[in-house]
Image 1 (cartoon, helix red, strand yellow):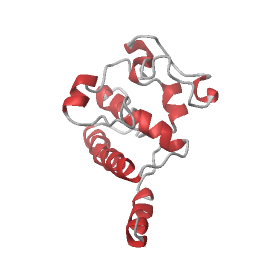
Image 2 (cartoon, helix red, strand yellow):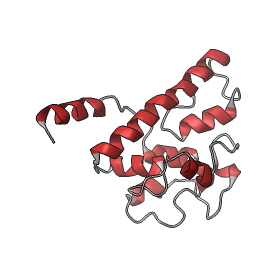
Image 3 (tube, helix red, strand yellow):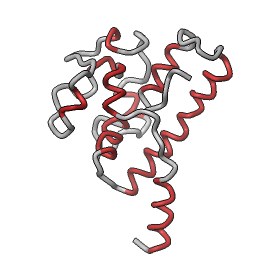
Image 4 (tube, one colour):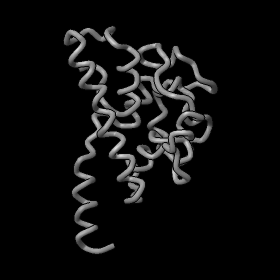
Amino acid sequence: MKSTDKKKTENFYKLFKPQLTPQRMLEMGVFGGSYFGNKIKEYPKSWFKNAKLSNTFDVEKNRFRVKAGLSRKEWLDKGWIFKEDSRGWFQWYCRFKNGRRIPRIDKIQIRRWIAFKRHVAAIKKNCEQGDIHCRKKQRQAILQWAYNPFI
């Protein structure tokens, strides 16, 4: 990698400022508790101590008790799943948080995270501040992208 390319990549990483850690997201309730199945050995045990987990998707495990997001088939059809992270964005984020860097993939996923911020703006525009019952599906979705849903 050329030094100018390396500098651009380093600057790009500075844009990624998630509001929630993977551990906090799991504690709050994401992906119906079933995102990883039983494939959690590569992650710190502490992340799962208070996590809301389930062997199968359980909407009651989600913070807002709603289903938010697309199916795995839809993710694949849209080209959002990469061989490096066969489970998608959250798996990438967990591995990124643990120090893994693949600049080509990181850039794609950080761009996707930045683009998702439009949902934060929609909640702010359409909901009274503090009304956590307004746009629950969108709040669940932003939680699953490491944005604070209590805006």
